[in-house]
Length: 152
Image 1: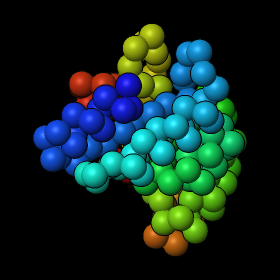
Image 2: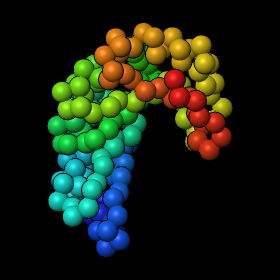
Image 3: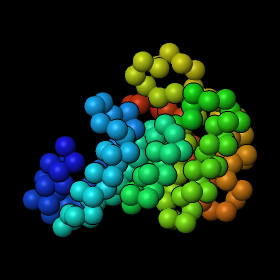
Image 4: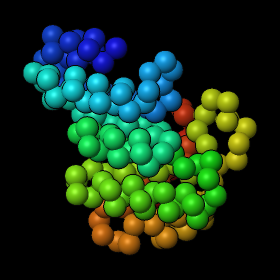
């Protein structure tokens, strides 16, 4: 699929974003990330690589080492403090690469639509407790796809 997207972008002479996830069927996630990154690097047009809903530090680390330009760590199944700790660990790993990190707090769409989203107060607490003000902060979102989006 990545090759087809990049080929279409090259044909149109247009930049493209390849967003991948660790929730891949049939192939080990780290292998998928490395394959997509190689496809992007070989392109004749700019290709931004984004890891969406990475589910572990190891997946984020693989994406970073493979040349991804942004990562999202999904620690939403963890407790609040553990989620912050995972996000902080990913921010520290991403900093030498100059890659921004987004963190999941709450649930997003699909089967989780009935799950309560975090409150703005929780988002504020999450932001204050994360990333030590070094400019490479965790981005945190609260939304249900297609209905609402708040950036903290």
